[in-house]
Image (cartoon, rainbow, N blue to C red; front, side, top):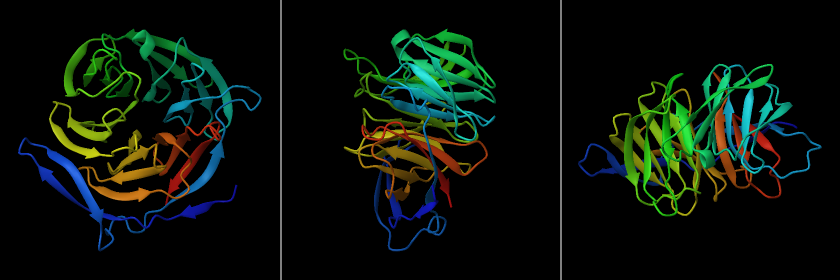
Length: 310
């Protein structure tokens, strides 16, 4: 397809309120009188569309998460069909790997390995993904984890959004053998069926949580200290990723947009032109200004989109 360039005219200045407890409270925003210097020329453009599954496969996928590995391979978690779809660096479908239950999250662990969260089994499955795909182990978790992101080869940040009877929401650090190193409560408004996405800053000292159950994006230090909370009411925040400068990209499902936040939670841009219907997950390609966006539209669910920051 031909490249198309899209520009949003929505720039923002930000104000924040501190509650005196060592973190910034709700970030409020208003249209800026002047375009922020660092972002006024930032655009996104679609450079590719691709289908993560075999064209002949007669099933409706649910691409709930995506991970781009440093070796160029793309792993897409398909919740509806209990599998992950493997695509090459050129976006060609390579194969599907059948999972033992429905995945909620996938993250890169190292150059050629991913961790896939299977909450129905309290399980995190590890896969080596290169010329072939093979299981490389698994761990059983004490909590019903719905998302993880790798701190190191042997440690993860996890999130547990509770159950119908216990709606407490926790995040913390867990080792590869299932031992909890830390656990922090941050909400009582969770429910296990709602999605959570996690991201880390470049130095891996802060965790960013996009939680659809609480309609918020939160940032914490690894010691549990809250840095900021950004509310996205009634629009269902989903996938979250950071670029190389620790700017935060939040996929907003209901409004078909991406909110660009500064590292400290101030709204900088809203990209809302030609974003696919009901976007879900986002992943930046390794050492690149390109990112992949999945979507949950019933009319267009087989397509993923590749965008470029320009």
